[in-house]
Structure formats: C-alpha cells, structure tokens
Length: 424
Image (tube, rainbow, N blue to C red; front, side, top):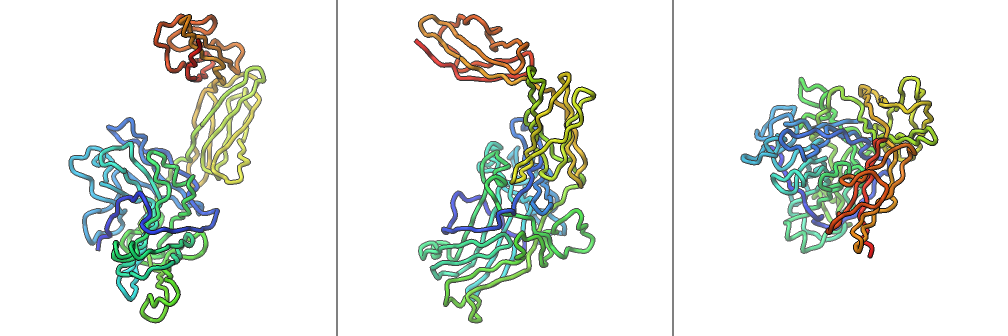
C-alpha cells in the first residue's frame, strides 16, 4: 500500500526529549539545483552527504511513481505535482518529496504502529518558493495506544523520550509523536547546523535488477538495514512499566525490518564555494576562505605569482570550512582554487581577489545638507567611490531626504555598505 504523506507540523504533538551520538549527521550540503522560471529561488540542494559518506539526491523531477499504490521499484517517495501550481510543476513534485525515506511497521496489542524517518523537501505555503525548506523528520504513530506516561523511542539515531498526556492521546486516538529538525525557509543547511542526527540507512535487500550503486533502497522492498551511527539498526517503542504493549507481557514492541528509499547520484564534482578571496597590498598577502567537503584536499595556485598552497582547516568539527593565508609576489588575477574529495571528481573555480573595504564614516549633516563618507582599503593605491555620489574626499551636497545607506566600491574590486547616520 502506498505510504501516506504528511505535511510539516509547526510543533511536536507530544512533548519529547532527544539524545544521540554527537558525531552523526549531515556532513555536506550539495550546491543548489536552480528551477527554470524561478530565478529568485536558489533551488533545493542537489544532494546531501552524511557522516558515513552516503549521498542522496533530489532530481527534478524525482525518479519513480508517486501515484501507483503498488509502485514498481525503484522509486523515490514524493507527491504528485499540483495541477495549476507553476512552482510545483517546475520542481516535479507536490507538497513534499524525500531525499531519503525509511519506514518500519509493527503492531501493539492495541493496533498498528508505524515509524517514519526522512530527509524531506517541502514548502510551507503552496506555490511560494520563498517558503521552501528541507528538514529531518522522526515520527511514530501507535494507533489506539491511550495509556498516558513516559515512552522511550529507540531509533537508529538515538533515544527519544516522549511524555504522553491523556488529552493528547485521546485527541489523536493514539500515540502520535513528530519531531522536525532544521525547517528554516531557504536555509537548506539548517538541517546540518541544527544537528539533525540522521545518517542514511541502507537496505540489505532490493528488488531484482535494482542497482545498489544507484539506490540505498528501492522504496518498495522490506529488509534489514545498515548505517546506524550507533550500531542500532532497528526501532523500539517502550511503554511505561507495567504496560503490556505487545500483548505477550512485554512493555515494548520492536522491529528491524524497514522499507528504504534513497537515490544515489552519479559521479558529481566536489562541492566548492570560494567564500572570500581578499588581498592586502601593503603586506603582499592573500586570505582565502573556502567551503567544500570536509574530506577534501583544497589547493590554490596561479602561475608563478602564487606557489601551490594547500589550504588547511584546523576546525575540530570538520564542517568543510577551509582557510589559507598566502604571500604573493604579484597580485594573481584570477586565482585558481581546486578541491578534490574522491569519489567525487575534482572541482576547479577561478576568482579575482579583491581588496577589503571598510566604511569608517557615513554621516548626513541635516543642517548643511551634506553627506560625509570615509572608508579604508587594504590596497593603499585603490580609488574608493561612493555609489551614486562620486570618489571619496570632500562631503557631498545631498538634498533632503538623505539616503538610508551608502555603498562604497573600490578599483581593487572590494565593496562595503553602511547605514547613514544623521547628525545635527
């Protein structure tokens, strides 16, 4: 039977607490996948990589059949595109789609019990790409379980404590618990920075003909799994002491059988973003900041003016933030940066270093009707210009009303923005 989709919830239905292994989680967020016709939307990440090295992608449209109640494997888990919704049609799915999805089912003596885990892409307002989010979901639905108390949910990612009140249990006709991590609109790295403990479980069996190098699970076949960061590849719901939850005298139910869906991308370039490349002309030095795979080797080179330099990170959490301070003989333009993190192919990008510009004064004199702007550059020879006003120097005559902010650009390529301060 085709699994039912659930919309994102703003709150957890029952109160809960969570503990997990500190090192598990998302290791890398892939580059955005632009959506044709929506230039203001950066696009959902092409892929996510976990701390085990497993990678899952979200193509546009997703691969598989969202309609058939008995889909042919392999398939991703996603909603049918919404008719008349241009954004939904462009991304190829409806209210939600999963980079990775795992569900497990068992029974209590009261009824069915379903466990759901997933890295989900959705948008909070239909048709509005500015509300797009990606988050990690944990959910358990134990129908007709109406006994209040403290329940423990043991998952492959840690232990969750669920405090179930009588009113909530009867309102939902059972134990219903949902926990979402990282649901921040357009911040697709929030699921990483918020510490979602997910690693992508892999099915140990798939339908004949499904390539295990392309799929973590086929979305249909049920099997045991591997990939738990704590070595616990099953789920267990434990009721308060004395509750005969399974009908056999035990206060728990558990299973190690899951249905997993996860599409593995083909060979993809190493993710690489040059966050900053600035120079100091007086010191003949460069500062280069790069975001990439935490396991990457990052090199900076530019002919004879910059010797080959391997960037270093020094960050204990290995988030993929690299930095190097480099001396140069002549200012390199452009600077070439290469990142390599097998099995990804190397990625090379070029970027012109720019000077560092800092606005030190942006004052509008109300009585005189003048705007005074001063700024400093890391290149003493650079010419600084206030956009819309001219080169810096004497105050500018500016009629009322004054600008809210001022931009200063440099012939060295740098720029800065400051709010204008009103003075008598």
